[in-house]
Image 1: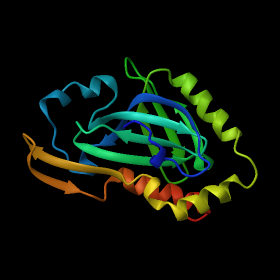
Image 2 (image 1 turned 180 degrees about the vertical axis):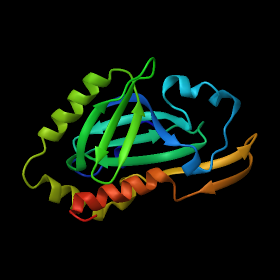
Image 3 (image 1 turned 180 degrees about the horizontal axis):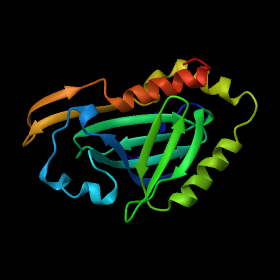
Length: 184
């Protein structure tokens, strides 16, 4: 969950890290509803689960890394040049940021959404000419650093684990990299 040097691409700099949750659809991940999901509709998260971890803003991307105590674990990247909209989707007590690209729409629960949006927009605006090509070259040389996606697990009392390696957020990382390449 902590950002390590081996998570970063050459030339990539960390800007900000904050505790966050990636919001995922339970049905898309084959996750069963648990007792604690009963009130989720009251905070705008019916049928969703919040995967705890950290959201890292770097000079190249948003990188979410989960912690190991979730039913879905791993990481996902959204490269800054692919972001088409940043939205404050907060409701009632839940503070959420929406991050859209042409092919994806992701949500993260985090405190300080207006400031986070300003920080992300400033990082997008700071991307210089030719930096997109540099990012692509570094992704090609270090594909393991782009985020392997979230792998979901269904388990009763953490035994009989069934893994889903092609989770929704893994697809997000792949689609965003293709957007960065100019393909969809």
